[in-house]
Amino acid sequence: MLETPEQSAAGRFDTVLIANRGEIAVRIQHACRELGLKTVAICSEADREAPYGSTADRFLCIGPSSAAKSYLNQDAILLAARLAGAGAIHPGYGFLSENAAFADAAEKAGLTFIGPTSSSIATMGDKISAKRAMMAAGVPCVPGPDTALPDDPDTIERIALEIGYPVIIKAAGGGGGRGMRVVPKADVLHEAIALTREEARKAFGSPSLYMEKFLEHPRHIEIQVICDDHGNAVWLGHRDCSMQRRHQKVVEEAPAAGIVPDIIQPVGMACVQACLQIGYRGVGTFEFLYEDGAFYFIEMNTRLQVEHPVTEMTSGVDIVQAQIKAAQGHVLDLNQGDVTCEGHSFECRINAEDPNSFLPSAGVVTHLALPTGPGIRVDTHIHAGYKVSPYYDSLIAKLIVHAPTRAEAMARMREALAGTEVEGISTNIPFLRALFEDGAFAQGETDIHYLEQWLKLRRAA
Ligand code: MV4
Image (cartoon, rainbow, N blue to C red):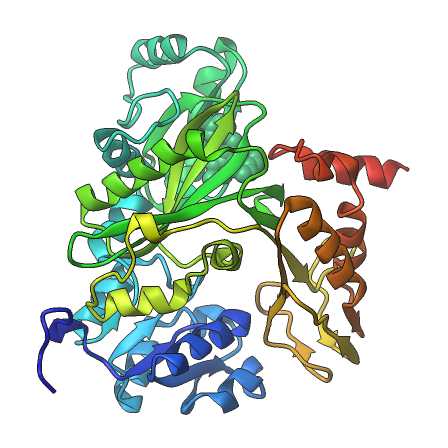
């Protein structure tokens, strides 16, 4: 094959090992096949019967049910890739998707890691270096230093006073809600720092902390980017992911209600600028808090996200295909001017969980009905007779709708939820149906605390 300037030898591959399971393993297989790529599926012993195995070109069992011994087992995955002749690894989300050492090990083994460089992953994995990179690129950040907290108590107190209480102490190695503590006033500052530092040392192997202004009622808005290896980057729109419980998103939408193009556009362009400045490659998500009309960067995710479909619906871009093509070294085939945001999209995460305790509900799906109709998409790996195992994440399906307006998309989701039946295990479907009847949600009047408050009220009623 002739080498074209669009495609470097480094990124050339014809077989992709998908280092994941569940709905995302299915989603990535679709993208690979449409691009003419062969697929290698892997599984743990618990997933031997999973249908995503039989649709792949190869299917290898790489270890016992425990994720630590299978989907997180780097050596087993690299060995499977070698045995099956894969030229690339797609990590999906979760598991090894944001593990810089794994990305490095894959590249050293001569495999293309479908994601950013291990150095980009490491920079964003350290929340202080991420913030420093973003401030340097002109991305608006939460007030507070982009350096680790010093040890000197007086200096720490001065930083807190300068920011203004309440402040939040966060671990550099944390993220996604782990390793953080709110400090309402000065008299509990040092105690909060000592506790968070000990937790950080234990959980992340690093005692490094930083301090920010604590925003009390923000929304969680994120910006999706896609970049190639040739200095091109675009943002594909924004999403609202405020509907969460204990840092687990439940409903996501694109675009965010009430956030007009004029106010989000400069933020999107700053994200693009940051990508170019750090030499980012592939897909990424910039997470922001949005409060009183202003955006504040908090973290960057260097992986494909669970909620990428809502942006696919509004932008018309197949984000997984674009990600794979970027890893192949292709030049991005769209400019910022080509990116549009059409209509409105919602995603509901359907979880196999107890409606009261929220604990995972394992067992056999005895009956399954999935909704059909215009503007309805279901991303799932399950079928009637499927055995939901207790070992992994409780996500069993994603219900995605797209309609011209937000109100129409909500109506379409109500219709889609009405047409969804899962029997044999407990799911959060009844609760999602109730949520889509909620008036404040319909008005777009929610923030990151809304769902937990709503659940509390509902339980009391
Ligand atoms: C914050 C914050 C308020 N102020 N930072 C939680 C997850 C992690 N990504 C960052 N998080 C937060 N950082 C400042 N300066 C509130 C949260 C937060 C949150 C953020 C997004 C979505 C849900 C959340 C739930 C609780 C707290």
